[in-house]
Image 1 (tube, one colour):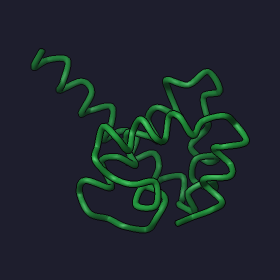
Image 2 (cartoon, one colour):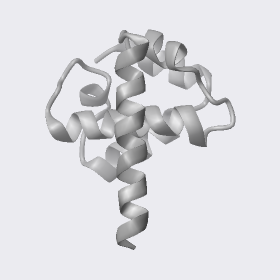
Image 3 (tube, helix red, strand yellow):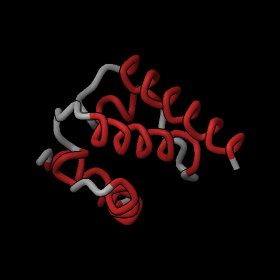
Image 4 (cartoon, helix red, strand yellow):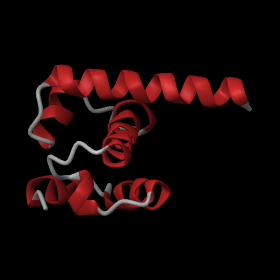
Length: 94
């Protein structure tokens, strides 16, 4: 597990958000914070990134999220865009 991510989220009182995303996607903290690229884990990670970027009052930048997860900011940008598209598609279906 990437302890850096966990400790950084804990410092910002965001472990509850991480746990909520993990429960919703049926993955573990360790999986979301790892380099695992399976579809379920990637979707959970994108969901977390999107929430960190848009739904949380701190509104993390792509660079901040990238540093946190040891990813390039463009990787985070792609993940957030994928999350946004999924959210948009979900609203249309409802």
